[in-house]
Length: 274
Image 1 (cartoon, rainbow, N blue to C red):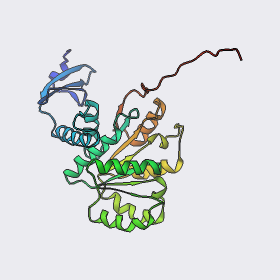
Image 2: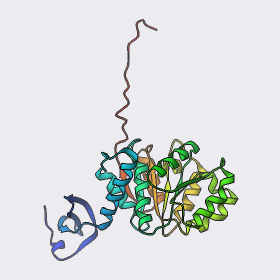
Image 3: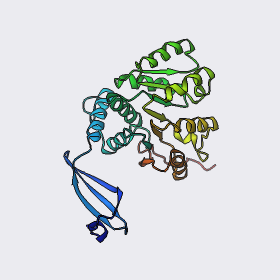
Image 4: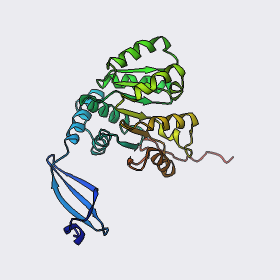
């Protein structure tokens, strides 16, 4: 690796430009010096929060997919990024990558350290029901507030006040409901993590752009203490850049291929001309 006089003089930026994990005990950092030269910062002890992320992700995956499920490195890195104080994280990964497992694991890890509950904003009622079920199978206490369970709102709010709910799922429309809005400020003061699911809906460039969703997402982003995670499987480069801009300059983005390898298109010639 190339060395630099600036590194020898101690003049280098404070952020690593790449990280390699070597086994489970050490990691090696590459730093960007002030003259643009990369230099090796050597091996340093692993961040304890990485072990925390791995442990909780392993537990969630085992509950959801069985004992043979193994966390992928990019999933661990995403959970690790989310559980940092007041983090801003964007995950753009294909359907089936495990985005929900990542935020269930982050919730589990953060709750184990005394953080408040997670608020998940999801645009689809049917999806929320599936997510509540998945969160419960992950070992989390989950509930939803929506237009179909008005009679359950008061018991759910009471459980939130008693810190007996780990995950609350709501639709964007609920956040604008006067009855829920009256509780929102108090809730936002306590939440540890805000998840904006289907985040392409907050982008002006998204094919499914929803102005109400964008306005409410911006309100949620104003929380100074909670971490914020935005997830989507449907975002081109322009949409990704727009969502990053809305999350803020210190956003950490995890983007993978969105190709659906399980789908195949083919052309079959007809037996006769049209």
